[in-house]
Image 1 (tube, rainbow over the protein chains, first blue to last red):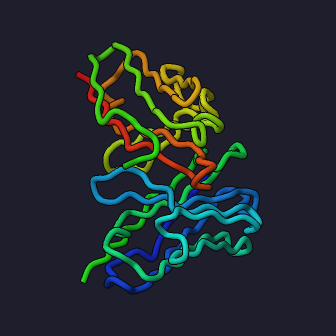
Image 2: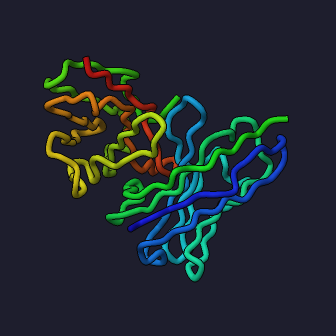
Length: 120
Length: 110
């Protein structure tokens, strides 16, 4: 069974840092690109970042570029999102999602999400 | 303000059909595939349609997708109360060099 489990969320002060993790199981993790997608409370979905299977390609939303870094460890079947210089508007539930079909907009399996709250 | 424009809400009676539109531009929908997601409140999104009009295994044929020019449409027939959810379109935007989502459409089944 394919599973993606996010962790690392919590309360952080503006300007602070947080590192999210996504543990994958049930499939060959190193064969798939992965997305991070977030959702602010009561708001819609917002794509954050994508990383290719070998980490050779990484893409970021303009709103996080230069502050967030996506990375992965294919040996440990894990995905990460290092978030620095956090702002109140980064408050959201962060999902990791597996890409399928060769198109980064196609995500077939999603984690349950981890909540990040940026507040003083 | 989302790059892709969806109506905030749609409604239709149980058993009827509804369509949800997603309007973009040449740099996104015009030149790229569109996906559609369903999100029931309190749960993670689920892909309904990918590559404009393909359904993943397990998605009933009540759900359909189409694209014309810079717009895409999700169709749902035989509406059920379980279809009440938020629906999002998504595609790649070449100008932004990233994935863009529509603002979402809340479906109410009357």
